[in-house]
Image 1 (cartoon, rainbow over the protein chains, first blue to last red):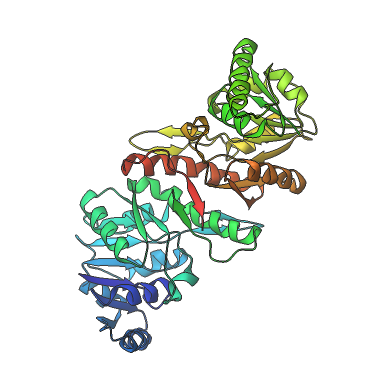
Image 2 (image 1 turned 180 degrees about the vertical axis):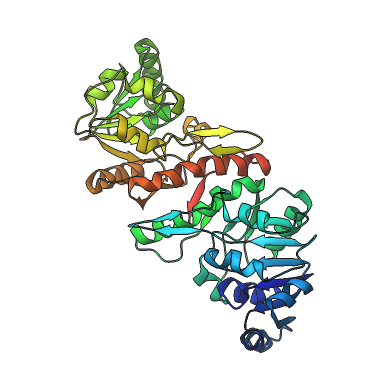
Length: 216
Length: 216
């Protein structure tokens, strides 16, 4: 499969390319293609050290969208609208959003747009034929970066497109020890996104690092 | 400690009395005192079979409030306001709310009151000196009833009263294998309550039973 990562130089982009580019072609996209190529080169070198051939390459964000069968939006919520406004070609593609709109006062809280969640906002911003799926929301950014660390978490996956959801769940199950769970339609993404400020609060108030969740 | 359970004949009330009445005096409250006494008698008999003395007794809801140092509101959200309107004497007491306001369309969703959560609504309905703590929200009702089953879950605990929160976290840690986590102020209860419709969706869409969560 071909995976295009918009904002691929961030933690989740680097983490996914390390953990999937031995099997899938990963197009690490960025506004700064040179940076994307540098990070892609690092991934190839790191995996090369353990004799794994990485199918990772640097790209612009638009090239990542054009090349990917699956597009991952690895961007901060506040840059979502401005980033998507510069990109085209999402028609009929599977688009994964791991985006969580989070606010902070004395604690962390879910700060969703009027649509109800970042995923529902993504659906509204993209062409109608784009197959939006929310996944990978509740994994700490730090954990993505630690490429030698196993990711042993549950991943709630939401979509209104049953086939796209199934493809993404299979992809999730390929990443380290992640386990995908069908969380229902895209409307449920509101709760899934809100679990991220919850685990940030749990980490903060219990002096823990990088808390995740498991469904048991 | 003396624990008064309003709506104690429900699943959580029966579960808590089975799991705590060997150490704590549990006042199992109900609108129907006879029913409360019958269920209390069952608990005493069950624990007696394994040579454990149960300090459980049946009561009216008002007697449970009057007797308890800690009050557990084991009631459905839709009966919250009408039940609390019949009861007095919550001043200075620790009040635990495990209540989740849940709606259902094609999926389960969090359906909070204007205050933002059931816990924040409880705080508004009770006297100002009541020490409201949310806990035990995400444990399936069926699991409470299965008294021989270990409860091996994480429990997010929220309150604006640090001392009351600490007392409730200690109590949570006494129940089976539950592990309490400080989730911050009562405002965070909104997310914690919403995790219940999430696990209901996870159970439904993955054909699982009684799904809970662990923070890892």
